[in-house]
Length: 290
Ligand code: AMP
Ligand code: FE
Ligand code: FE
Ligand code: ZN
View (cartoon, helix red, strand yellow):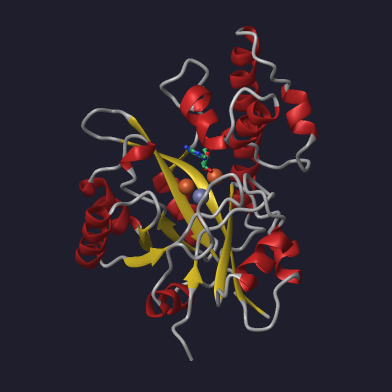
């Protein structure tokens, strides 16, 4: 058998991807993946439809990408941390409560961004945007980006981010995310494992320090994503080295978002041994085999 191809970070229409959960699973099979994780932002709504679509030979890893924040102890600055959580009990009360709060927070925040844009004369109708989304789903800036594309103001989602949606533009509004330490504890208590997504992707904004990462490892963090499209080669190498020093597992993933990004499924992958270890440490939920 050829080497297993494992992609542990992908989004569906349950958050800000463009493939339905079932479509994501079908796309993973078509791409020749052996394992794919569904990791929508702040929701597990895609788990059931994705599970039903798993075909023979494919393994689905139910997960989520939690919106969390780390306070830099030196500067007091808030640093956004995307925390991948896998194989946790999706009915865990604290997890359900916090994800529900975050989905509401995402709606409030996106509405405020849309109001700033509308006040500037941009043709953005937030109720129309929300009307296109599943009820109770977590909207994000990609949904504003698509509306800007539809309005003909930009040609692509990427262009919308550069011209309108980045924090360097006047329309950006921050979210109140979960303190990352609390999120790690919450997922561990729900039997899951946690991996920091693209920890040192500086192109996305300020990143955590190596000292902060060491503290999170001591707290019970399970792993770090080293191979990610937003990590350059030196960053990937350094992340692996740190993982070795801190006893963290190492993953690699595409962070696929369908046509909202240009990255293909399987663009980065995870070593099978690391994947097995990750699954072995989780007790809250099981992988779904086709
Ligand atoms: P939000 O969570 O609402 O702040 O939006 C962040 C999301 O936007 C990320 O999860 C990515 O999916 C997406 N994103 C961030 N930067 C870009 C970009 N330059 N082009 C396309 N999508 C992006
Ligand atoms: Fe996203
Ligand atoms: Fe992310
Ligand atoms: Zn992601």
